[in-house]
Length: 213
Ligand SMILES: C[S@@+](CC[C@H](N)C(=O)[O-])C[C@H]1O[C@@H](n2cnc3c(N)ncnc32)[C@H](O)[C@@H]1O
Image 1 (cartoon, protein in one colour):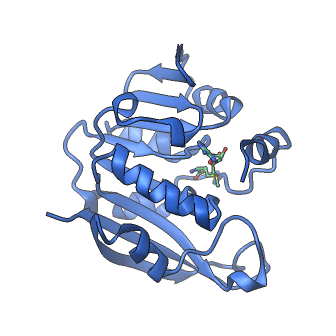
Image 2 (spheres, rainbow, N blue to C red):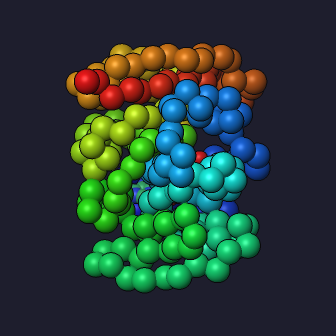
């Protein structure tokens, strides 16, 4: 899946993945992860999610990465914050108090640029990528965060009934990507009203991934 696919979606305002409200599973399960006071959360493939505003309200630092610069301009606009913008090799960094967003390709993001991370919040990231990229993404995220615990929100449905994002991520697949680094806990599985885009019945599945000792 090319960068152009996502940039065109943003350009055409084809962003049905963007939720107008804070994700209810973030609100409900985030404390499970026991993030330290003033801890730092990594939001990969962040778009302009309202979840970032919620995290900042909890006095949590946020670092994100996103391909589309206009999405990040919209994010800062919605937060009513003027960012400082600097250029670092392949990235632009949009930053403000407690918030840093790397604009560029996550696969070019290094542990050094990212900095320390206490928790990863993956909503709409793994499910946004086709299988071969999911393998690459999961390895990369584990590496650049030194296995930071994750709250992972996926969906599961019969992939043969529709193609494209959000992709279905089975429990077996979560295990295959992450069991070497984490102990996996399924904390919620419930039907999505109207399924995926009204086409196929689906469940939303929330995982907690804790670092193995
Ligand atoms: C399905 S959306 C989810 C956005 C956000 N997490 C949310 O919940 O609203 C996936 C996002 O990933 C971004 N993206 C896709 N591939 C990327 C990559 N390789 N590096 C950085 N961002 C990427 C897209 O531009 C898009 O905004």
